[in-house]
Amino acid sequence: MTDRAVTDADVAVVGAGPAGIAAAVNAAARGRTVVLLDAAPRPGGQIWRHRGSEGLPAVGRRWLARLRHSSVTWIPSATVLDAGEPRTLLAEREGRAFAVRYRGLVIATGAAERIIPFPGWTLPNVFGVGGLQALLKTGMSVAGKRVVLAGSGPLLLPVAAALARAGARLAVVAEQAAASSVYGFAASLVGSPGRLGQAARYRAAFLGARYRCGTWVVRADAAGPALMITLTDGRRVWTELADMAGIGYGLVPSVGLAQLAGCEIRSGAVATERSQRTTVPGVFAAGESTGIAGAEAAIAQGIVAGRTAAGGSAAGSGRATRRFAARLTRAFALRSELLALADARTIVCRCEDVRLGQIDPAWSSRQAKLYTRAGMGPCQGRVCQPALEFLLGTRADPARIPLFAAPVAALAARDSLSEGDT
Image (cartoon, rainbow, N blue to C red; front, side):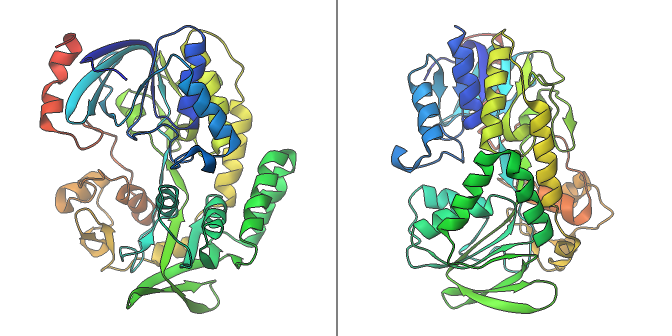
C-alpha cells in the first residue's frame, strides 16, 4: 500500500480478481514495479470473495499466496475515476485523491450482473444471483431458508451448490434457456474435462432440488415476511413460497475504464489481440471485461497480459477463449418472453425510482437520462443500463468522468496530481 499522492509504476493493474492477480504477479516476476488497485478491501474479486481462506478453492488460495509473496504494491478500497490523461489513472481512496502513472496498464475490471426487471424485483429479500452469492460469501446465514434461484447462465450452478452446502432449502433452480441448449452446451465441454467435472460437482451438491430448464420468473409478491415467486415454463404458471430469491440473467463485461482509456469495444467487450493488447498502445485487458468465459480463461489471459505488459512475450489462448465465450453466449441467449415481464409500472431504475412507462421506447439512452434521470443515480447505470438495452434496444452512452460517484475534492485535485506529487 502507498500513501503518496502520485505513484509511478511500470505496470498498473486495475481489478484484483483472478485475471488481475495473475497479471500483477506475472508482471512483478519479470522485475517490474507493479501497482494493483481494487475497490474491495481484500483481493480476490467476486469469485474469490470469502471471509477466510478455508472457503476458497485451491487455485484461489495458490494465487492469493503468490500475490502476498510478490513485490506487487496492493492498494485496496481504491476507486479508479479516470484514465483520460496519458498513461495516468486518477483514483480515490477514503476521500483522498491520488494518481498512478504507468508505462503499461492492464484492465481486469471483470463483469457486472445483468438484472431484467419484473414486477416485484425490488422487494426485500429478492436479490441478483451474484448479489446473493456475495452476501453468502461474506457470512449471511441461509440455514433453513427456502430459496428460489432463477435466471440464466453457469453462475446458477455454483451459487445453488453454495446455498445447499450452507443449509438452504432450494425450492427450485430455474434456467430460462431451453434444455436442448443447456445440455448441448454441456456436451461441448467434453474436450474440457475440468469444466465438465466442476459442473457435475456443483449439480451433485444440490441434487435433491429441482433443476428446470426453459423456466423463468414472472413476478414476485410479498406474502407477509415471505415471498410468493411466480414461475412459468411457457405452458403452465405456478408459484413457489420462498424466504428469499436470487434472480439474474448472466454477466455483462465492465468496459467503462477501457472506454475512458480510448479502447475499442466490440460486441460489448474490450477488443484484444492474442497478446491481450487493446487498440491503445500500452493498454492491455484480461478476464471478463474481454468477454464472459470463466475464471480459468481469466487466469490464462491475466498471465499473458502481465507478461506482455512487462515487456515480455507470451502465447495466448485467445482464439479458444473466444470460441468458448461464443458457445456460452449462444447456449444461454435470453428468450424473447423476458421482454414482456416488465409492465408500465415496473421500476427499471431503482436509484432514481424510474418506471418503464416513463421512458419512451423511441428515446436514446441519453434522452432517457435527461428526461427521467434513469442511469444517473449512485450505481451510475450499472444495473439499469444493461436492462434497458435489452428491453428497449437502446445503446448505453460511453463511460464519462467520473467513472464512479466520487467526492468533488477528488475531481478538483485532478490537474495538480497530473503534474506531480502534492
